[in-house]
Length: 195
Image (cartoon, rainbow, N blue to C red; front, side):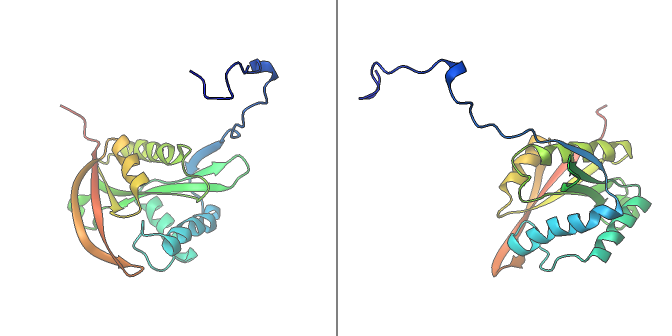
């Protein structure tokens, strides 16, 4: 039964109705990061440092620190990827770094992914992480660890779970930012071939 006032009302045929609003296609490419990308990478990370608890950094990294990270990634043959819009803007990035410095951890990395504030909710985080995992696997890495803040990072938790990461532990109150005690969630993805 139709609500009062709508009984007997007709809908216009589809071809006479106004077109529904549609988001423009979200075009991007994922490629290895270059030195020229680092100012945009720095700015994306700066946003999270200054406005959220998804990173425990309290001061943004300098451009020199980002250059060092890119150089170390290159030297260690670990991927550092950026997502670039069709206009050339950096929309997000993902990279892998050694889990620990000891040689015994050489087949384990920690992954990180960050999107520009306007780039979320369109599948870009997943695309970056899938590309990162593919690159990591090709380099013989066996285990990927993700360290995720226990507050304010629900989208990151969902993303990692959808990609097959399993929660392997929690550490409570190991950090403090903006006057709040914070913990972390540890997630792991095994890339080992099944026997």
